[in-house]
Image (cartoon, rainbow, N blue to C red; front, side, top):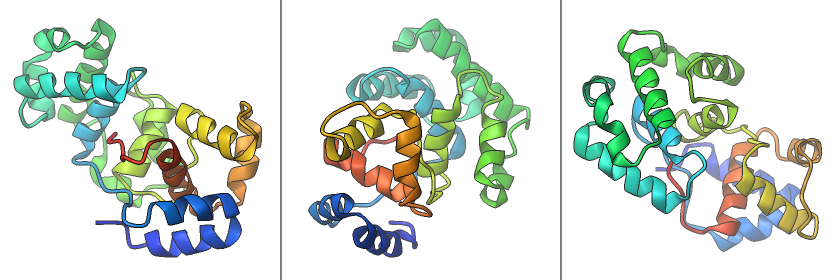
Length: 204
């Protein structure tokens, strides 16, 4: 089910931006959706870092054979076998560290819905392997925050370059300036720009 703000955001973006209007109208019946439990969402994001969507899906499915519910406790129990799933040693360490943070109560997941975006990001990046991009994906896909602009996302950079700058690479500052016109619906704009490259929504 789409977030309740989605129709309002679409209308606002269609009015403000002709490029987005065209993309939004080309994808009328799909919307962002919440992706599972906080721990599972973050673990899956770590798996997907710097590899293709198809490869990430394959690795994640192998992780689920070891830890079917993908809970912190199951991951910790299986931690010595994670590398056999196709994870690099470093990613296996990152996911184990994430599981330990959750199991020990260092992550205040119950408070995140009430916290500001930057406060959630500040807490998440304390975990090894979670940088700003992963935290921003979490804000968008788990907390469904409407106004996230992940300027380091390669897909967003590519889409903006293609549609607004004749295919040229876009500096982050220019991307921020363009994105200012989309506030407070920058997550929605980003999601539709991703769809212009790949119509099938990606899970993070």
